[in-house]
Image (cartoon, rainbow, N blue to C red; front, side, top):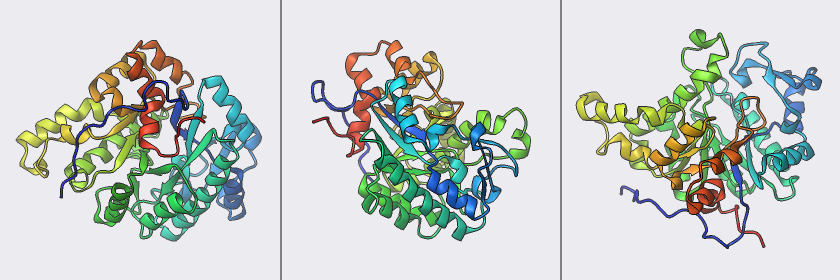
Length: 352
């Protein structure tokens, strides 16, 4: 039976208390995970003092020797909490960065092991945050056992939700191998952050940091389009939040609709792609007030959640102020800053 796609009202009404700003897109690499990777010869921690990490390409998906930023907030909880104060954030959902997703690895056993270690370490990291941190567990999409690991994160580790990459196990997100993941996400109504975890044509993007600057936003749009045309969002109704404001997807939605109308190959689902895109959520990490206003106008204030991408160097360090500069209706502002997160994520509860 096709799920209902009606919109739901935005978050808790004024006066109910709770965090005023909830960041749903931030990253952490806890030290127990890094030490384990180093012990296995998969990480070089010798440059941590200069905020740099080296990872084996089988884990990171980036070229051998590529320097990965490792600000201390990634593993130092007190530093993280101080950064939250500076950013005006009350509660932050932390997830592993895509550098430990193993999205392009052909060693499924290694990916599953690293993912489990990462999830265990992230749960401990968040628990040390004094109630100001909550964890999103990584789901190793494309691999057997992905749904079991997702359930373990929710049930055994008590995580607030989940995160997935845009590719894994040599498979796209709409591959039948992921059907049990989509079924679990729908059944559990688990909040799930969708983060780009690779880029197509990396050789063409290797210069000018274009893998992240251009490849990642395009990758998000590609993955979302496959979820639409592959029928995943027709068969299932997961709670998906696309980072970086959905990347290129919002701008491409009209073109996807046109293709669905006019191209037989794209007429794979009974509804316009626009209808499926309207069911998705987006974070605010678009780095421009005009772009953010347009995103909220197009998606609706009930579909946009605060996201920073902290503590990386491409983070939105002024995210709360950016939302407030828009001078939205007070109810819409509350929804974007915290209300939508409180509505979608059970652990984001009103303060006592």
